[in-house]
Length: 541
Image (tube, rainbow, N blue to C red; front, side, top):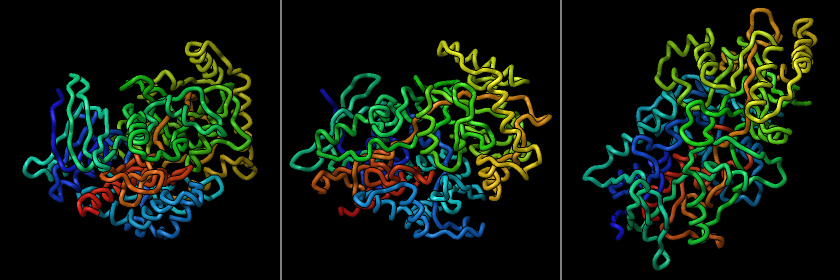
């Protein structure tokens, strides 16, 4: 027989959005039960491992750097880049809410909890034709998202006066219950033991993440009009599998919208110490690396360059004849530009080692490059291009029974690019070089982007090839919600007592980002939707 728990609010999911919801409800005197599938030490979900970048609008740091930003400007960028349709009523309203309130409800609120931001604003997702972020907005939490998550967990526990908080780790919700037209709680199972528990509550908050933790669901939801990959690495949380989305839609009439819109990355590698099957790491592609197809030819005619349009990078990579592509660079490029997304491989920022961070920025992050050379069989190093081609073929032969890289083709690819520098940069006529020059005009990017130079420049070796593939990350779609984070039915009416926050709600409205994100909108989207839900719950609105 199932045991029973009574509470005011049950939060399903212990990621950032769920934790913030619980924190705000506890501060208002509510009794809260958090149901989380993961182990106690992994409370915090994917946010515990994320890098911690946030797109914020008109902040003090932007003003200090003389960046003229405003909610109006940010909204123009957002709607244009995301291609939100006129009929996307709730996603558009959430986009408006985000740009209007990210400063006080995210930036200022986090600062009030003792968090700090790295003193530079980065410029990402500029758009291939300038239609993305028209100004830099990407703020990095000092200490990464791990520091953010741990502080929020500490604040949640500190707000638990009188034992009003219960965290049920290792529990999977199996049913959402409604009685008399209003929510009455959830049923869950303790996965290690199989013990059943019923949590009775008039308010249920769905904070279980998206659907991209299941590569099968990701591929199944892939839009039919876009190139669809045969395989994907998993860069999301494996428990974000869409099961609770289906329960909410099938049993409660909730609306799952924009399920085919995703924020994936185009340059994943298998995690050398995988936490689960198919686990991948998302590399941040070097702007100066040449992006090659499976045969060692440069992808084009428009070269693939990171930092401008991640959605387009994914589309082009998905259209390639093989599920893998290559990044070709030399050691000089890798030491300055190579990075891996997330807290795990950004030790200096994560551990707040400012001096070491500045030294590695100035002298090159040889530590990370050497680490990947040791740990990843997909990170290949050779003194010659011919030797590199041999290693590339050996890898694909071992993994796929195929070898496609002709050493002469790889050499010709490098020679064609290097010909741009025959007369310095005066006669260079290459769009990748133009984009690099543009990126280096912004100070923070200049520090992390090499001055254009020949790939075969003397003293810049050895050569490096990284085999990369598409990797999942975020679901841009989700359960449709209003500005109070209440879950909506097809008739536009809210399901009484049911809320959805964070990625489960498509970061607001069932898809606030549209087809593309301005990048860094996810952590703030978790906070904004969670705080909106808590305000509604606490005021009874």
